Image 1 (cartoon, rainbow, N blue to C red):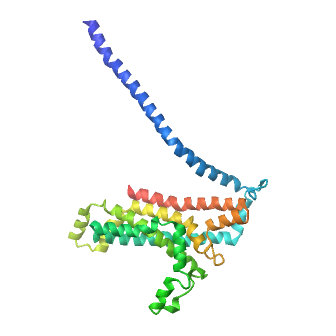
Image 2 (cartoon, rainbow, N blue to C red):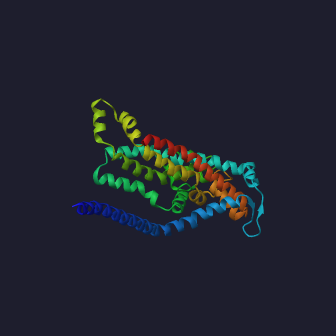
Length: 315
């Protein structure tokens, strides 16, 4: 009897130990297989992102023309960037583009997405979202070429102004020192607006309709519902839109290079344009790398507060 009790007591313990060992081996095997599937992507990311990033930091402390020997100069390249007015001016131009690339698309996107969510339902809503999102699909180079034609002196925009009797307002938009940067910003609005609308409208579908019904029973207007319900519950989506569009503004290159190449003068020059000119035209790899590192730090400084605020709001 005692032997039977001891045997029955030991069997469950041995079984559980064996089961835990089996599960542990299975987890390790699945983890190993998962890493095997991930390794190609990690290798590509390291080779095309991490290695160039680290090399850029290294090059920023050297004087180098890209071919000959490198000479250690310490932080002189960073000092040079701060001492050249044209290079510092590109940062101010980038922040002006933030207004066009980020604030305007997000603001308009909230309004348009709210209207689509309330009015355009069914197939009409799907068609509206598709049409508005199309500019996001078009390559930025192609968008720059198209808008270069539209904003030219004989372009469609000037012709439309002349048709409605506003010929005095016509100008070479991309060749005007005062209007070139804003004209490029208009192209950014056109490209990024659809992305903001689709993302924000998708977020609105997750809001409980009962909240709007309760607000209407309390006599709230559409604008009051928009301020009290829609915006607070879309903080996370707004944060994503701001993050993507702010990075697009600070790191802008394609549209500006195709439309103005940084001109006239330096009125539309941004850090991305100057990095390209320093590295591939002037062969000044050190200053170009220093400006690239400063641009990265600037992006992090601007994006981190946005991420922190939206994360706190989402909680």
